[in-house]
Picture 1 (cartoon, rainbow, N blue to C red):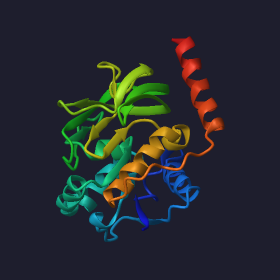
Picture 2: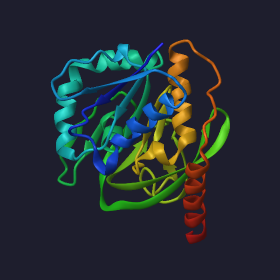
Picture 3: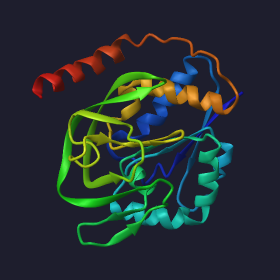
Length: 243
């Protein structure tokens, strides 16, 4: 049994160290003795989404999003089918926006998304920047997730489930109190940092889902997360006191 990871467009989508999300996922697998392989897929290269257990899409600019939609538009059906069959996806910032219906730029240009998920993004007058704490439910337990946001787009969910509610920061749009989006095993977020090293509980949840996709439902071996937990709690407390 080998968990297979697809890092999509790492050369174009790697804002604020987003590559660290793949590193955290793979390292926490290896510490447990779980074999894991990573394949980087760049612009124009073939990809069979059904062959993977975990797909990561990082953040990028408006220009990159336009290029990537063109590259992916003929493979949307294959991606949708893989998602319906349990593919675990983590999409950050620009990668998040890419999965929606469209992104409207400050100039009014509408960049079509993949319409994999039902949401849309409009450019705001001011960027939403700063540290964030959200509360999300993972495996039936409420968990505080921390990260850093820096986005000009405001995303609005059309009845789609958010990743979590904002306790501190802006979130999707600075208005409705939601951050990110969630559909089946797809997790979307504006949180950089990178996200997974700052939140080992979320990382392990994604690993558990990827294992379940392969038919394994075993309990993960516990790791010593004392340092990660202290760092996470320190940020939660700092932002709670600031608020």
